[in-house]
Image (cartoon, rainbow, N blue to C red; front, side, top):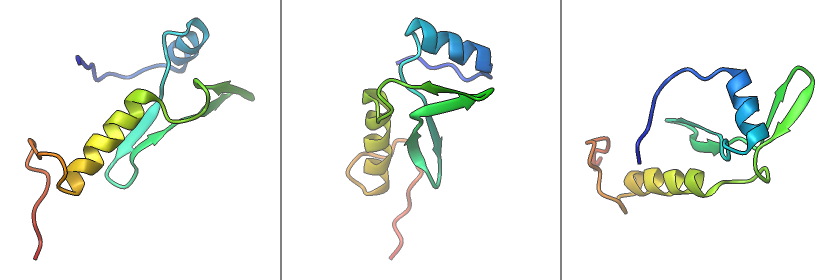
Length: 84
């Protein structure tokens, strides 16, 4: 999968939701791991993302990252350290 890291405007997000090209939104971080976004609110309007639940790709990322945390997946990044 190719990825691109860049800033995204709210107008681009709304356009993607309207056209159907944006199908999932999630946040990621050390505490949240991967958290799906079901609804965005902007200028007093709600923008529902997909069905509001966890998308296929979001779930895949969550499973992979938690798999690394629990030692079920290889850690190719050297993120984990065994503490005895």
